Length: 228
Image 1 (cartoon, helix red, strand yellow):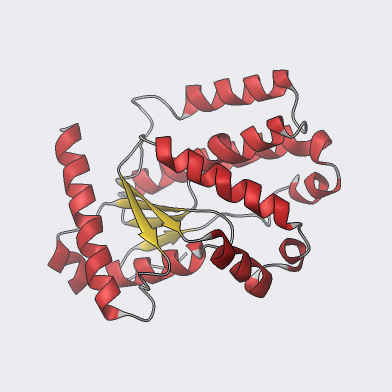
Image 2 (cartoon, one colour; image 1 turned 30 degrees about the vertical axis):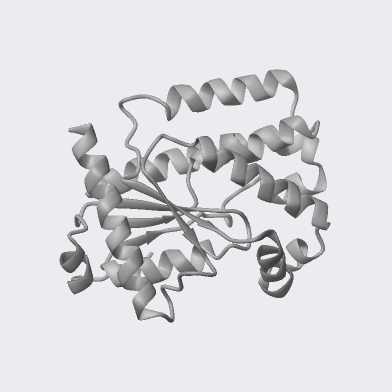
């Protein structure tokens, strides 16, 4: 986790110092790169997914049906604790991947592909709703959804992905891509800003930074005024 003390850009655009910004999008779209770049620009800390302490991940890839439910419950618990921690700290975070993608995409995909039973899926969904979809659970100020064409994202996976990802059939990535598009079109838990990776580059292009930060500030401002 990294942090920066002050940010002229954050003050220039009026982005609250206690904001929590979540980055979403399918595998290969560049969430991690965007997360660190945005955090650097705003002087925010970074919250990233921890996989090294996950006791189910290796087992899951060996037997999806046996360990799918366990893996999803573990991720849910870890993301729940992390989201609470960010708000208890006082905000000022950019988060790589949201808790909402777990149920909206990955658990549903396991269930629909026959790797999670009806009973397990219902238990997981009810647990998610009881923990997360309540007025008491702190939701991010904004979800920035990174998107691009399927061909662009597939190229990125094949070029930069982990060996395991590079060996994964194209059909899997297409299914995941379509699920993300369907999920984000109905997501309404917090304000959403869609950013096309081919149009905006916050790492190399200063003009992109200006546009993205102004749009982020506007979404946060509107979201906070709505919930007052």
